Length: 294
Image 1 (tube, rainbow, N blue to C red):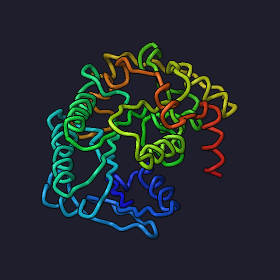
Image 2: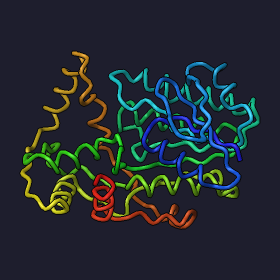
Image 3: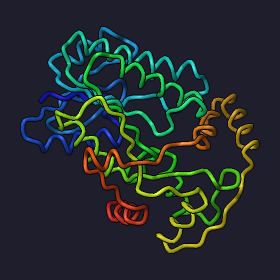
Image 4: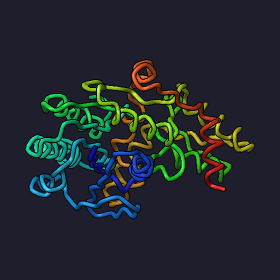
């Protein structure tokens, strides 16, 4: 099987490449835009989601595509749609022209109308995938943590480890279902290699849902530290993110606030049934994360 990964330079992408490279009969190709991927035995193809011609060349001879590339932080909703929706459609069109059989689209647990520009773009991109005429799977990961993960929750865990005062959004009741990076990568791999699995939307979240306050407390306990919470009013954070965005500082873009606060699904029974998904609890994941960092 010849597999192409977009977004291959991410930690999820590079971890998946290494895992797939160990599989007999699997040839992995990484599609990159600007960032480089330096993994032995992996072919590199340069392409741009905004350039349909480059995508046709990228998917030539490919059987299945894992589409992970996305814009995750922008101050303009139109930019999310240009990359995450139009770019996905360009890739789907290229796949159909090249005879690609299957696409796995990495979406988000936050894909919904009320979650801001990024969330809406992911929801629309899912629609494009379902209507593509290809065999498809849509995977909706929750907040990803672990070695090298770029998710905000990973930065929060690192902050809790280092600093005594932890900033918390609002009342701390925003809800999370953190998933460890290795568990997510394993699920993507199983979904890809199961030729009978198709046309499903699957949530890949951790086994427990918890509030932000609970996340801070449990993480602190894992590290054996005591942490105080600095509560930041939602309105203040919204305004601050808009001011910073106007200055070109993207520490927190405005649409990340509704993305954090929107209602999200947490039922992973379909994943457990279809791909034997059994993610580890937060404490187990943090222990594994610390072990890797040593």
